Image (tube, rainbow, N blue to C red; front, side, top):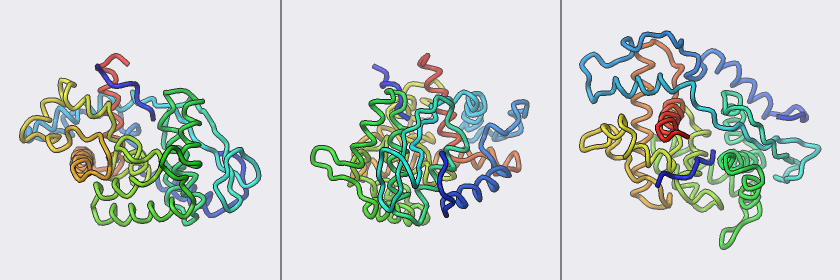
Length: 299
């Protein structure tokens, strides 16, 4: 059976967050995501001339599906004066079930919250990513899962601003050291983030240049999509990324995620090197491959 469908600002007082967001807007306008690459760009110009690892067909797949990614742009809008959600330090939030497509603005928004120096904004970022991640399950269910992170669920305690900040800081240290698998594991103690699909969503928003999401759809696609499966056999680019969904406390799962992100970076680097650009990020490659898998399943 194929996996279930993948679960993937408002007015406020001027703050460091807003300045932070607009600083990245300015930078990313100069080096934006994959959709800015011309649709008419000859694919031959980004192919490996000697066909090493058959990476040319993966690049083709990325280009063919780069405009198909259409995940809903759900988010939690943060405010200082209103909102049903409380994140501490007078920061509040409102659920915003935006039916538009996930785009550069949402990437920057979550990036800024997660990397903010404010623990309350870090917590808001985590809750917003969880809400976004369950978008295709419906607004009410997505709200419920975000609230579980804030209030706790079962044996899992509520995530506080300080806990959120400490876990994100540890993950960032690992990311900067090139330890993406360890970074994934840092999120394991947090309610709603103990398994690969949602912990990897946080890592992808936290560091989109080097990381992507790994969920049930990706896991299934590596074994079933006619192009991806050829790269999942012995010696293939995705060999080490197979069966990567599980508890992020597992070393095996961490290693699978590390391998997945390595593959995404390799493909992105190949495209960027051949085009002479820095437009394509690891997360752009992941989203294109996700779209290819969804199209293959007829989603």
